[in-house]
Image (tube, rainbow, N blue to C red; front, side, top):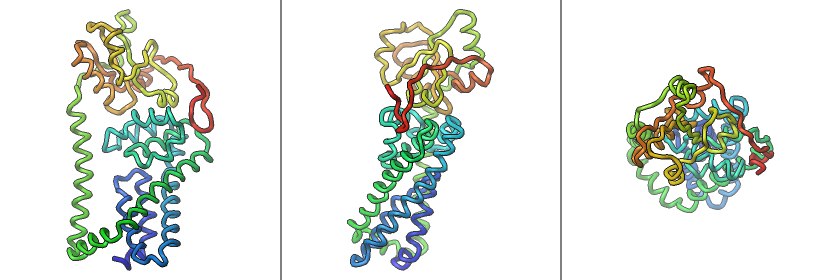
Length: 324
């Protein structure tokens, strides 16, 4: 195993980190720990190779992240929606990322790799927000260095324990590969099951854009909640006319403002209206009888040729934060 690490460790780290940065569900932290432990077995000469592996990790991360950065810059919210659809976890849906990015701007990239799902969406969001390249490279590179340094450092500190695990796997022979493959498949399956369980728990009822447009024309207008976070509204600065911005985390204000018999329509930025359906369920449990997510959200509204209103938004600095 030590010979394999010496011969292929750098290459393995590069392609593993690159694959992770491109969005493939292949964890890279175990590889970094393994390589760090392998280098620690030769303490007299480990520091220069360790720095080399760190540099390779940062380079691979920047290459993969740059692909998504430019995709976000060119295609905007379409790139973010694609990532949400490919995600195995609701956490990588844009809601949490929007809030982090709206608060910290592009600086969030320096810690994003430590938060599951945040890195994958915050990178194209930086592009969609038209952040300039130098701060992107600076903060993303810093984040990649901290993340990779942690993995390699854990390998160095716990090299004896890692060696014990490696010896155990070596005794299994080809069975070790089977065990690792089964564990990886189980991890992906578990994430997929969590996502499907979420969808099954949400109410399936939806209102179509044509029905909502008819209600608005006939004067029987429901209250329309736009629950996209401020970060996404900066990327896509349009709303359905008359929509009210709302935060699903602050239901108390809604409960005191709108009577229980009020018809409510909710739209979000997530595929399958996940956030809107989740909020609709909470309002129903609070006593609202007629509350529905809008199928397809504002994108379906626009696709139907219906008008939208432009939001007055503040200027955005080169660091990616709004000048408020």
